[in-house]
Image (tube, rainbow, N blue to C red; front, side, top):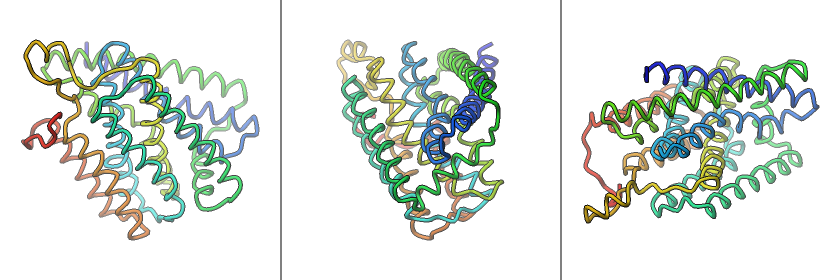
Amino acid sequence: MMYLMIAAGLVLLFVGGEALVRGSVSVARRLNISELVIGLTLVGFGTSVPELVTSLQAVGQGAVGISVGNVVGSNIANVLLVLAIAVILSPIIVHPKAILRDGLVMVAATAILCGLLWFDQFNRVSGFILLTILISYLVFSLVMDQRRQDETAVMHREEGEVVDAQYGLMLGIIIAVAGLIGVVVGANLLVEGSVTLARSIGISETVIGLTIVAIGTSLPELATSVVAAFRKKADVALGNVIGSNIFNILGILGVTALVQPFSVRGDAGASAMAGTEPVSIMSSIDIGALVLSVALLFLFALTGRKLARWEGAVLLLGYVLYMGLTFDLIPVPAILPNG
């Protein structure tokens, strides 16, 4: 039954996420909202809605490992899996100026996430700060893109154009609402099934969040990136990944911490009874994979002005190795004292 719940949850997240994005984009076009605004906000936020709803559902059920693992795992999968597949399908010509601003914001957001994980500061103040940074970034980006119309603006405009959605106003609203309902139901099924699976086979909820849940909630990004690659707009896949990673950290963790603060230090009560320090649910391998994925993205994107197929293969190999480490197929001793 739990496998059926997980499968149904993944399908509903994917289909619902796609419907939500397409319906919302169609409505925005009917309201004469520019492709620039659509690409910068609706596409980036829409593809991250599955992660948002899943994380909120998981924290609400006390499954913090699934919630945080979902965000960290999704960001890793976006680069090492989603972008890798897009690059293998169609090499990306990189315009450094187009990704530099958003890329630096992604690096800063990743650094903030690492700090929050290390110091375990997922409280309402942190949530408010993360959301403030996200809103400031969006407002600044919109103003600068509309004023300069440079390479970055072109990339964001193409992110909106790659979504094929030309419905009527009412049909677009119906599709978007149906998609949102599908995402909520799918997230609930996925979280419940994942918690049951973790407990039944003795794998931590964090590992399930980092793998099954993270890959499942990254399916909308994968679909968008693959479509962009087939349409010979593979650079959109790069912008989509960067934007999604920014939304995941600043938006999803920001909203989650604001709604329901949580701790990543495990069961403090049990640790106190055992006379030990609480251990972080995020290991050094997870943080290392997150940081390495960002480093490889910048190394490949900014040095050769092109993401070649062999670089996509390297990224994909990195994800395979990470999966091996996560499931203890490649034993590695802990490096960080708290993880």
